[in-house]
Length: 350
Image 1 (cartoon, one colour):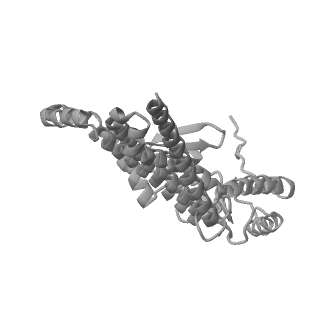
Image 2 (image 1 turned 180 degrees about the vertical axis):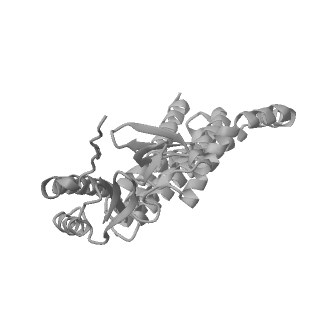
Image 3 (image 1 turned 30 degrees about the vertical axis):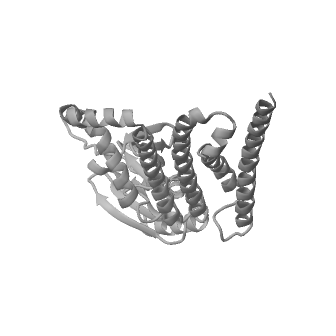
């Protein structure tokens, strides 16, 4: 009776000791990480520490589960094999979780150094697009590897997997052919991340629609249309088909306004008015100011006003402003210069 009581006390002491060891390991690790977080030159801050604290706890639990002396003293020695398998799975989960959290922390730290909302944000959009797509790719690969390693840790499943791979070559070929589009989309996503024909916040014209790139994933791209619709396009579209990218190399863009007038229009007066209007608005960036006659038809002539702005949205507003003001200018000052149809009547005696 006394020996059984003593054994139960020892089991309780080992259990309490295991819990204390676990808590102590977690506490010491968190304190060390917090010390690193106080120094701005390190990647870790309070939010980063919160993200990695739980996977570290799981890692410590897996370590404690592998200590055989604890199993024997708390009376669960017969479950040692099962606990070791659970410990192995927890190690795989914890390490995968830590790696994913680390990737997210690094991405946030790097992207935080670039302001995507700035007017000249070309470099920021390049960095953000690359990290956004590469993050998804790496996380996908890590999860696939983690699942594979977890399954291969069981002998029975590993044997089944080997036999399936050995006998299902034809099925694998059929599956590969059926998944061609999905694989092509993923490869296109990787190509976009590297070559960057499009970037986050790029202004594009796709399928005749004007909009901005809002999201780039491995398989599809979300484009925000100007009227708040969303156009979902597969990533392969931007590799296989032509499209317009207004901000590929710079956020600056030229705007055009076309006027169709009579041959009596005074060009110099319109040039002076265009210059006055551009100088009167903050929409113009002060770079380009030009007026040219670009075509002459029997009934009218085509005049093109060319101007520049810091980005596409501003250029649109500037074009609307200049078009309206120039038409008002011609209506008030030179109404005879507006395009009209001339009819000539001859008096004939019948």
